[in-house]
Image (cartoon, rainbow, N blue to C red; front, top):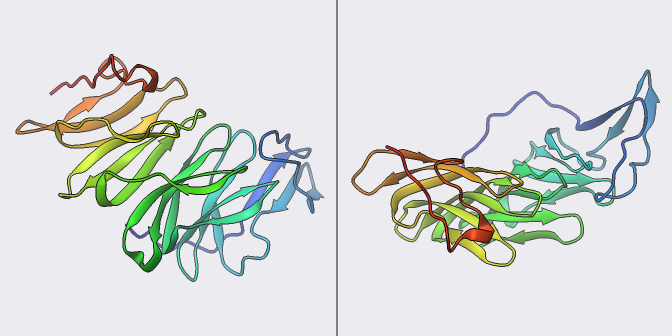
Length: 227
């Protein structure tokens, strides 16, 4: 897994203007909040004896970020669960995205750091591995409010592939005929944006108006390419 440079120690805090935040799917509003002039502070990393930093916050109050020591691990926080370290058993992990309604995705080293696998985390279920395309490295890049995850995964011959994952269909190679491909973003409408390199050709892009790749229309659409 690619390492991140250390940053200045920070305490993970959630700020809400004036009053406690309205939290729906994530649980009840946080306890132990202290009012200060015009806003409310809630410490998220209670019980973690390390510096931490928040990276993203969903619209329903799920925060994701990183605990920086002794080893770099990602976390998710909700009012219902508190702070949860996101790991598949290895020494490092990273949370890469959180949807508007609090679905978290990322990647973690497995036990013994044998491989890097993608995961999905939700408040009701917790963490679950999403599978792979045959290789030892999978990293999600984006997740939408329906739980559709897109990202990059290596094949058994170390080719990089763009993938999409859904709970129903599992992990799917989006551009199987490309030399390599990556998926970077999925919208709540199901459009996927990324790039691919067709075999023996130059790199190309795919996305809205070039690739309308919708999960519900997989049998009727395909990735368009422009060179």
